[in-house]
Length: 229
Image (cartoon, rainbow, N blue to C red; front, side, top):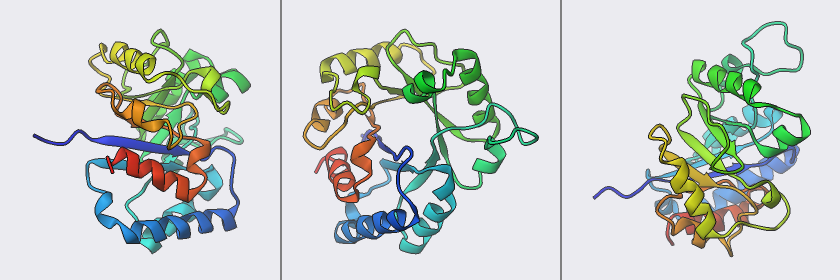
């Protein structure tokens, strides 16, 4: 029987400068070299730096030869062209495999609505990027074409509070009734001391840590839990 694939997506948000990015990779690599066999093909590890540091992160992944992938924290709802300040799918596809769409911080602070998020999903798919679509509950609209959903209760984002594994699993089960949704991950104050409860639920395929991904040592601890160590 094939082992179920697990996912850990580290959202760095608007954090780190170039020196800190380099230090993170240096520290992460030191842990990786001690336990390379931990990162098997059934474990998908993705980090989501700021736009500014995607090229640097890409360079460091190659330099240190670590099995990480990159994702973008956002994407333009438009293609390339006269859209000042936007970063289009065609520009991102050189660096990333995944893109977060609909994060609660984008919905709340930038007032992004379903119609705009639909366009972002369409642009991601057009650029052969994989949308990681964030929902607040099982009633959140999910655009067609989405296969990966991140359940992140608003009250748990950056607050230190977390949902119960039982409720998160129930939401994931409800979401997966949509046969197009193949993967559901949990995000919301994920830490080494609470991650196991979420991973034990058969409907939860991984986690989306924010603050806990900023420290390479803590992120490595999360990876060990996801890998079942």
